[in-house]
Length: 179
Image (cartoon, rainbow, N blue to C red; front, side, top):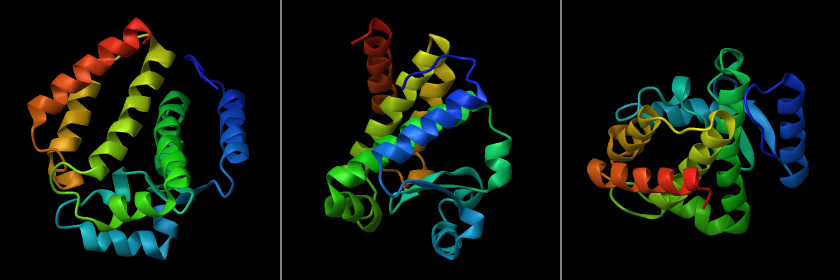
């Protein structure tokens, strides 16, 4: 289901229902209500102190938002785009159940690796959602994504920021051309 801005509450609900139908076990959860997510937050705090408050995570078929206020403060368009990104991870986890979990969760994400591949696929969907919603993909979004790939939040999984940014520019051009 592809939507354009503005996204109504009914359209967003229909999108969530579609994800629920496509992805058995799909559920929306909140990190602050999960013991496991709070434990993970303590473990990753030295390099990602905002894991519990700013990041959405997919685990075991569920999407974990930081908390209910995080979702309430988001626009429906932002929530739609974020769910499209996370749905890519959920589909990858279903398609490659063991490999996805091992390569994403257990192997150190430092440097080029499969975690970068999984995130690239998710962020490509973020760009497609942005195009569908607004008809454009702003430079600021490309900068934010490049910073995440090259920075400490994802443990420097692709530390060549300029290379990542250039690839994002090429991907944006392809998406805007309709490729």
